[in-house]
Length: 459
Image (cartoon, rainbow, N blue to C red; front, top):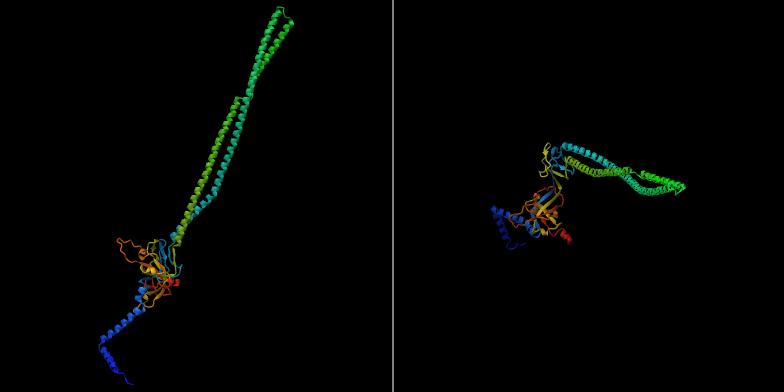
C-alpha cells in the first residue's frame, strides 16, 4: 500500500523534535511541568467548580468542627479524695469522675439535722399545747362571763328589792302620816268636846248651887264630862301609839339595803374587769401563740433548707459525668484543695464525639440565601487525601441560623469610631455519617446550596 505524500517527512520532523528535546533536558522538564499544571488547574476549575461555587452558592472557609464539651468544675470547696478516671478514658453518663472529702459536710449535715429535729419537736409541742391553752383561756372567759351574769342578776334582784322596799316604806309612811293626822284631828275634836263638856259641867254645877238645876242633871253632866275625858285620853293614846309604831322598813334597814345594792354593783364591775382580763388573755394567747407558731414554722423551714443545703453539698462531693464522652483534660489530683467557684477554670473536660457539627461564619450579604435544611458540602483540612483539590466532601445540612452576628455573640464593646465592615453570622451545619477522625476545633470549608433542601422540598 502506498504511503501518503508528506507522511515520511512528518515522522522525520517528530523524531527530530524528540531528539532535540532529549538532547535539551530543561525543555523536557518545562513541558512536563506545563502538562501537570494544566491538569491541576483543569481539576480545580472543572472538577471542583470552585470559582463557580463561590458565585452561585454560599461559600465560606471560616468554619470549624464543634463538639459537645462539658466543663467540669468542683461544686463545693473541699479536698480531693480520689480521681478514678484519666485523660483519654471513655466515660458513661452518670459515671463517677472524682470524689471530694465529705467529712466536713457530713458533720454540718448532722448538726443541721439535730437543730431541725429540735425545732420540729418544739413545733409539735407548740401545736399540741396551743389549742389547750386557747381552750383554757376560753374556759376562763366563760367562767368570768357566768360570774358577771350571776352578779348582774343578783345586783338586779337586790336593786329591785330595795326599790320595792323603799316604795312600800314610802307608801306606808304616807298612809301612817295620814293616820297620825286623822288621830290628831280626832284628838283635837275630843279636846274641843272635852272642853265643852267641862264648861257644861261647870255651868250646870253653878246652876245647881244656885238651886236652878237638879241633882240628876248635875250627875248627868258629870258623867258626860267623865266620858268625854275618857274619849280624850283614848284619842291621846291612839295618837301616841300611831307615832310610836312606824310601818315599813326603818331608815337604818333602807340604808343597809342600799349598801347591799352598792356592794353588788362594785362586785359586778370587779367581775367585769376580770372578764375583760380573761378576754385579753385569750386574745394574747391566740395572737402570741399563732405568732410563735409562725416563727417556729419559719425556723423549721429554714432548718430544713439548711439540712437540704448541706445534703446537696454532701451529695456534690461525688461528681458524676453529665454525658457519655471522653476525658479530654484532667487537671485534678488526689489531695488537692479545690474551690467551688464557678469562675475558676474547669478541672476536667468531657467531650462527646458523637455530637459533632460545623459552625460556619457566613457573610451577612449571603445569609439571606441560607435556609434551615439546605444541603451542605464540607471539606475538613485534616481529611485532605491529596494536594490537588479539596478531596471528596462530607455531607451535611443547615440546622441552625443564629439570630445575631458573631461580634454580638462575642460581646465586644462598641467601637468609639464606627467603621462600616461586613459582619458574619454563625450557621450550624450537621454532619451526616460517622467520621471518627474529626476533632473539635479542626478547620473546615463549607459550601451551602441555597436551592437544595427545604426550599427545594417546598417547591
